[in-house]
Length: 171
Image (cartoon, rainbow, N blue to C red):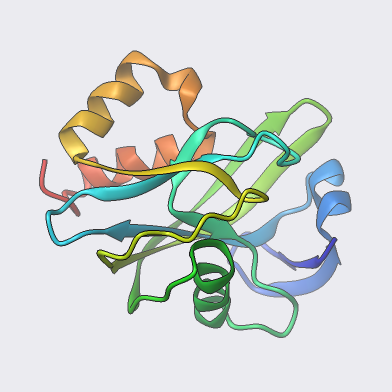
């Protein structure tokens, strides 16, 4: 597995650690989440592959990962869009947040940088990353998260709440 960038509470880089070890130790590290909207204003979401080391089979944002040591977060977002979805998009960071979530013996402790882009492209299938992709309207998404929170990743629920609260999307 790759290494992640360890950070302090102010998101200053303080070192690196192997990704799974960082999650087992609950070390604070840098991550990113990408939201893609189509021209109809719908959000692209993916159902994570069941083989993922955590949150497999849950719905989440279009793409998420970690920048590697020495890599700028924005560069990492474009790299992962290509690797996971097979396309690229102009991206803009809209906010970041810190969260902690337990997944059995793993602790997700991240500062997540959220980027938004637009595309009407169909994702290329990547079974190592996702089982399914779909575009969904925000009203339908918010309603489904309220009815079925267990079907969505912890960080994605935080992101959607922030989007609605900060009125970064039309609802």
